[in-house]
Image (cartoon, rainbow, N blue to C red):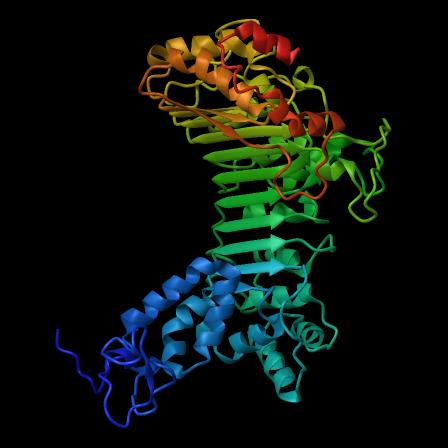
Length: 539
């Protein structure tokens, strides 16, 4: 390859030292061809303007491994270096907006001045935590730009929006909603919820699906994924999401829905609330394909309504957690205190399985778990999952042992009789207060009959939340793993129940004490294969 040194001169280290050159300092003897300069060489024209596009993109790709927020901050600084680098980095710079590192008012002004850039934004992250940018002092020119932008939208309340956004004390929720108005190609929306039960951006979504003309506002026709960490938002305000025509993935975290009013009193007629949900999201109308609820405390009737609203669900996951419900989110104290009049979210796995069976033609993955901050196994109240053999595409199943089979297992076919033949991966969660020996008959039957009853099975994983992880893992290796056929990969993984970043997660004193003393219980010489020893330890 021939290099044009006028367009791309050699780097300073490639130049041979000569007379009149700056002093060189070699790693050996301060002279010679391996010497490096101690200061910049001013007579060489190498700069970012002279680098090829491929090398600049390689540099940007290297910076991206630092993390999304760091990458965007560094990319913004690099793009200010010169116009050529800005033109190259423009697509990456405007592909995603993160509210923590960029002033929403400045972005709104930019999108109004340059409508071409608004087409490049595919992802928006709305975060209500501490911001990492300086406040922008509004000027008269700024206010005129914002006003002209809302006037161009031709919505009925454009003057009100312009006045709110141009106010020095404008809240971030209003600015976020205004940004969404100017992002017609938005594909992913991630929200870390604030303190507003009905933020403006939710009303914006509701207006877009109303069916009535609303000025020149787009209708979120490309919004594919929405992920929300819920604080004060209720499902009632999120119902418009189920009616977005392009939405395929909805993930909610820390949502509490017990069917109660804001005062904590039970509804006088819970069935009327269910009828309201059915009217808002009729059955088999939502295009959602993936519904994920993590660290949520949702009543069974609400869960089944959400599942029934989907046309063809492919992936479903639900982690039932009492953590947020146990604590008052504002005052930080335990507000239930064992009171029986406080509404709770009922969980019934047979009813949930029945609702999921409507999607037997499309369902590919099911994942369930629970965290009750309790020292007792509540499987007698929850029940077990029902028959899934009608799900002809179900490849991945994840559930606690006590949800797959009653503990102790009454029948050795409890697990294998529920799974379809197309299952390729099975994850069994071992809870802190359940014991493998109680489900041994069903697990051994699963291992021995997997080739005949589950011919597609290739992986069985045990996610152990039990404090005695090492002892439980050894028991699996000795008593279960040899029974599985060689083509089935059997693994164990330690997954502590309280490492999800939830500040409301609680740990019982008994569990904490047991986990801290696990190393003392592990005797290096205690390696004999003994089922009775494990049983005695568990009891």
